[in-house]
Length: 308
Image (cartoon, rainbow, N blue to C red; front, side, top):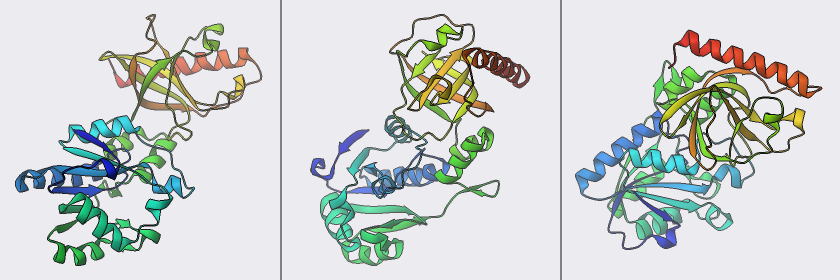
């Protein structure tokens, strides 16, 4: 799949079928749109194009949300679904001022040369979010492209959305979140050198760079960590480590029965159970005793769940 960073890098576009959105998490609702997109693009003999944003509109307007997936993971999910091109647009002040009419005329028609457009039932665009599916359909008639609205997906009477999944993850309901995502929730990243404080209390951890100011999960969790396609069980802390005076959100995993050098390795951490909220302890000794309880609780969970 080709990654195109910015409209200015979109060259020789002879036509495409496209969809537009943040696609955070690429959940089952997103997948429904993308499957239709890929199929239609093949039938029309044009490339499928997904348009997303490097800075989300919510973040630009000061309403940032915890991301369900990193940009890298989102890109790989889209690739796995058969998308041909991924156009990444930086949402900035000038882009936010483009009127809905100009977005259709100058971006979709002249620049991207859209032939078929799929949008969700709540899709809005243009300055002040004045554009919607009805406006797109009105303009499509004179410009020779087709617009199709895709209804939202519901699972077990729950509408699938990134916001709904964030709430489920925050409450520790990983089973329902997995249904809505269409896969287990995981965070990926490279193992980096930490401050080695875990070793001082007998629990050395793999520190994973997540580069997020906001995380959809915070606390202590039972996890599976996949390293070089092999899964290991462990306990994970996501938070600022208040007992140690931390200032930024970190992801650390204590891996059971593990003693390998994995610095620089890319790993995937799959969240299975929430053990507790992050707590500030009065001493290292209190923290050490609590981690022992977390380890015992997680090992019991894996035993009861019969996870190999």
